[in-house]
Image (cartoon, rainbow, N blue to C red; front, side, top):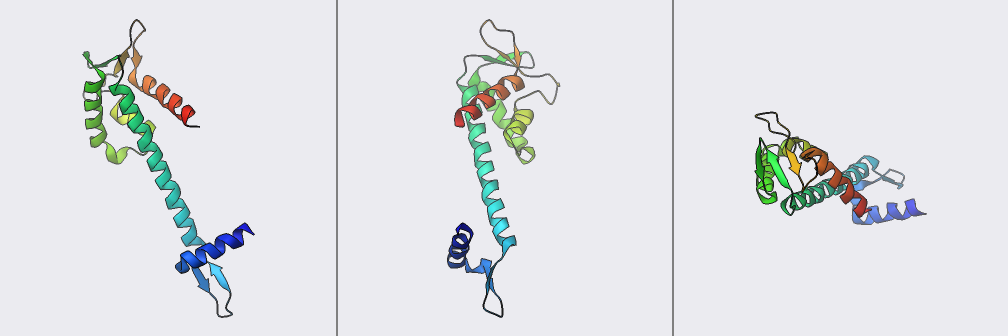
Length: 143
């Protein structure tokens, strides 16, 4: 019943996805429907990734922790400025939030030194670990 209903909806809304045989039978063009569904799924993944990246940038900007880059300490807002520059530079390579962290917020391309996060009296963390942990927390909260 559900398949028949979906078929009728597609036949009425998108007649290009339905073909009619010489006997008058209507057939759904599954390859076109598959492409539409795949596109819708891809757009959802892209939107989700963008929301996660936006959250991480906000997380960094609002932190009281210090962001160490090549031995120099930066506050959250300064760190976000730098991360955004790298994000723009590597935009074509970034397909996931994990890629965003890897390319934009992990280490210096010039020196090879990892960025570190200094929070109060805790031992410094690699920024990659700090951000991946926050990403896990964020994803869990979205469920």
